[in-house]
Image (cartoon, rainbow, N blue to C red; front, top):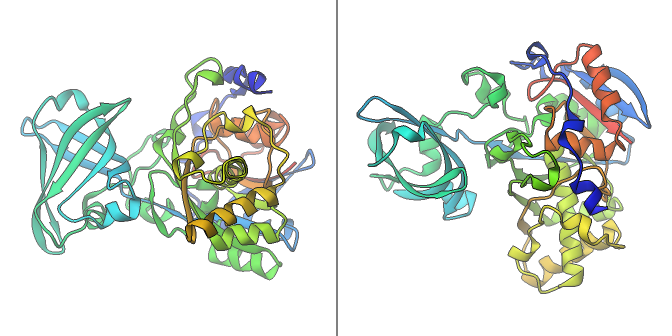
Length: 406
């Protein structure tokens, strides 16, 4: 099965997406967006506020509570050249929370815009944080693929890196919106339940939820739980290779607390996932459980889910058994939160283990997210997208959404 999946041609996942169908801004009221319902092969449409009536009572719905950081920093060289430094993930310290708490210095893996104009020297910028003027420096280190190691330093022990980003960082809205970030994006490009800083892109299926829809979910007997996957810039990276075998998936960092895993077990390892990031996290948990069943002494690095791991050895483990392995691991290490990472690629040929329904937006042509959707709806993605295109649905991050029940 793995070889078949690897030889999938990405050109088979193309569709015409006119620019006017890409939503450049969200609707004034989030939950008034359109909702396409795909249930057992049948398609209908409604308004997002109807979602609670469509999820069976007694379901467990899982959200990604990551928060988008103001990850873009701009520096001007003495020559006048504008250099953009886009923070992707922390290196020293390599923990998001610790990095945001750092004072005086920290290091991040960054993408650099206008790199050819930054041949030597440090970038400097005078900024005011908490009423105090400080000098922020960016020092270029080694190249790592398409990114660079960047050391940030600043001359104040009272100021954290988080506060610097809050003052001078810019929110990184998706490149396909073809516009500058606006002040309104600071609110509209965050989910109402975002909590944990670390993403450079929003888990966009969650952008449709309002407090009233969340409350309505609970009133309809749906339990809500959270996990965290920090969305990387790689989520926007198109598949450039002809076959997906040659596409390297980006690594994303996840953390899931014990209560969420226990609730999943109580719900027989079945969940409704909000967004592809929640899908990737939940399905990665299953793979981590499989790893632990084979090697109970596996460390944090060995729990990392590799791109093709799910296709190599199809496990007989049930979802509940896999999740119980994780609880046992947490018991052995006396931890309440599982921190790990995933590079999982979900494509046709993948067997879903935990996710039984998903809420998701309409994704870019020839993207790994479209492969994930296709795997979920048994290849029926074209029927869904044809309907959306012919019924005035809005596409991509600020667009409308779908509820998929295969």
